[in-house]
Amino acid sequence: MAFAQLTMTSDQVVTFIRSSIQLHHDDRKVAEYVKKIKLKDKLEDRKVEELQGLGAGPRTLAALRDLSAASTSLPEAPPPAPVVPRPTIPPPDSVEQAEVLHEIIDNARNYAKTLPDYMCLQVTRRRMDDTGTENWRLMDTIQEQLSYVDHKESYKVVMYNGRSVANIQHGELGGSTSSGEFGSIYTEIFSPETAADFDFDHWATLRGKRMYVFAFKVAQSRSHYTIYSGDAHRTITAGYHGLIYADRDTKMVMRYKMECDNIPADFPVKDVKLDVNYDFTQIAGSRYVLPLKTEIRARDGKYMSWNEAEFHLYRKFGADTTIKFDTDPEPIPTDQTEEKPATPDAKDKKPEVKKKQP
Image 1: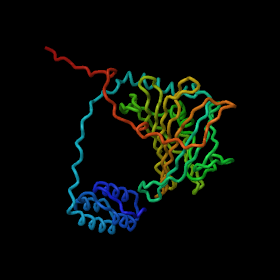
Image 2: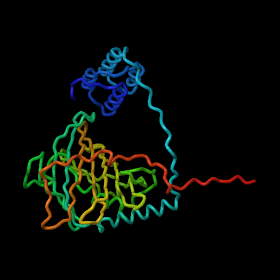
Image 3: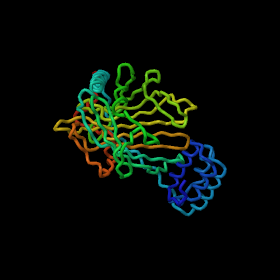
Image 4: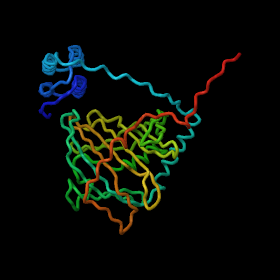
C-alpha cells in the first residue's frame, strides 16, 4: 500500500474498510493505511460500530476510533443527494421483444460476413494492483498491429513502452493477456450451439444513441470460454452471464459485458469480467461496426489486473497498407463507453390509458 497521507471523506473510508473486510486483507496493513488518512468530515462513532459488526479487525478498529476522535471538530458528512426520479420508459411488449431479439441475433450471426479484411492499431494499457484496493499502477503500454483476414485475428507487437520491438508475439508478452474478445467470444454468445438465454433488461443510451439492453446467460456445459493460470499451469472453462447493448435503429450489437461463473474454488484466477464496445467506423468509404475498446479485469488472491485495449487507425488490409506506430494515441474518453440513462422520445410507445366504462 502507498503510505503517503490520503485525504478522504468518511464515506470513502467506510467503503474502503468494507472492501478490505470482503477481501480478507491483513488487519495490520489496513490499520497502517487508516493511520495515514486525513478526513474531510466527521467520522461518526456509529459508522465505526457498523464496521465492527461487519468484521473489521481489532487493529483496524483502534485506528478508526483514533481517526473518529480526531475528527470531532470537523463538519458532519453531507446527507446523500436526493434521488431524482427519472421518466419511466415502458419496455417493449413481448411481441416487439421477440422480433427485436430475433433481428439482433440474426445480425450477430452474420456479423463476420459483413466485415472486410482490415488492419488497425491496438493499444493495450496493462495495470495491476497487489493490494486488492484498486490502487492501480500502469505496468506497460503495448502497441500491436491487429490484422483481420479471412475472418481470423492475428497480432504483431510493434512497440513496447514507446520503443520499437521485433520478433515478439502476442502470447510472449507475459503477465495478463487476452484475445478474441470481439471475434470468437462475440460469435459464441449468439451461436445456436451455445443456446444462450436472453431477456430484456432495460433501455439505455450509449454514445448518444438509444440501446435495447438484454441480459444473457451461457451455461458452463455449452461454453468455450477458457481461462489459463500460468502459476497453476491449468486451464478451465467457465460459464458466463452479462448484458448486450443493441442499437435501436440498426439492431447491431454495440457493446457486451460479461462476468464468468462456475470458476472452481481451487482455481487461482477469480472475478473475471469483460467489457467490449463497438462503434461505426469508416473503411475505404464504407461504414462498419468495429471494435472501439475492450476491458478485462481479473483477480488472483489480492493481485488484481486490468487490461484496456483501444483500437485506432483502421485501414483496409492490403500488401501496401501501412500504419504509423511512432505515437501513443490519446485514450478514448470515458464518456464514450459509459452507459447513460435513456430519455423518452417520439419513438417510445405511450402506455395505454383504459377508459372507465360508464
